[in-house]
Length: 136
Image 1 (cartoon, rainbow, N blue to C red):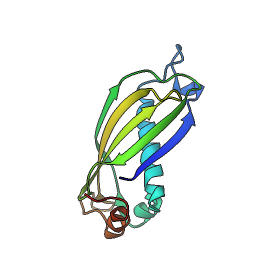
Image 2 (cartoon, helix red, strand yellow):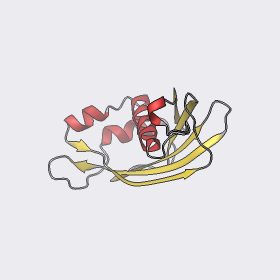
Image 3 (cartoon, helix red, strand yellow):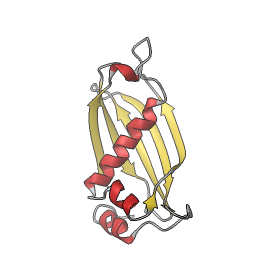
């Protein structure tokens, strides 16, 4: 199963006065993982938008296990959960540089027509690229 990993350091502005990552910043980390996952498949979110497709998040679940701290090198692991249809679902794990599990998460996004805001099927060209890496 294909997975994407992206690593980066926690910036000072992402933390509270105790040096702990503010909980709301994890949603941005998940987005970074998703976009990197798409790039790995040679799928550009910008190209999808230019072609009239948007992908709003319709569900977000986060389980906090341990705090990420200022200047930690963290790794976001992103995995596709199942074959997309009108929705695409991802599971995530976030680790620190000691390989300690910090966060588990799940997001569901819907494929929408940019003009009508109506649900639509995952584009065939995206499905074809996914099929190269997944066997659902």
